Image (cartoon, rainbow, N blue to C red; front, side, top):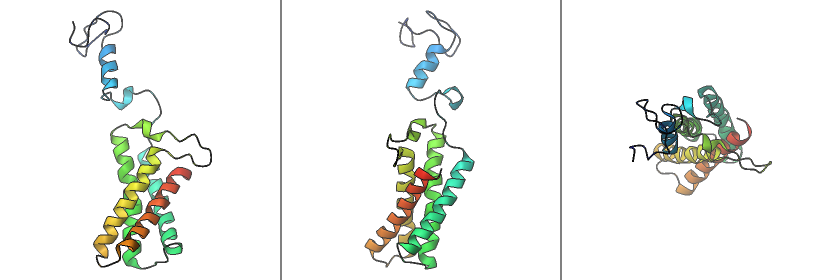
Length: 167
């Protein structure tokens, strides 16, 4: 029995060829199964670019600020500052993780035409919500926790909706 799983596999990274196939085919197949194949060898959709991430994060900031002012009825710099940071850092941080791990499967939209959300979209919203709650709690430690959670949720929902519909 070969190191790479037996005679059905055809090659290894050192170029040795077993039964049928080109050198390295079986090794790449096994590495693909384990999620270790470099991005250049992946088959399927691509993760979003850094420019698209920054563009989307900028849109998330605008949407979150407008939503906090209109829905949350708060215009103080103590609130808008952390919201701006969270609405930018949340989507960029989440998408950077997906980009670094080549997680193409997260970019598959739901088959609902009016609400085509993906795990990538949801992650942007969740990370923005978490970042907003932490940032608001640090800046305003004596604020009511329900108010902090509401403002964080507004920020997260804004980032989620921008991610679904605008980029």
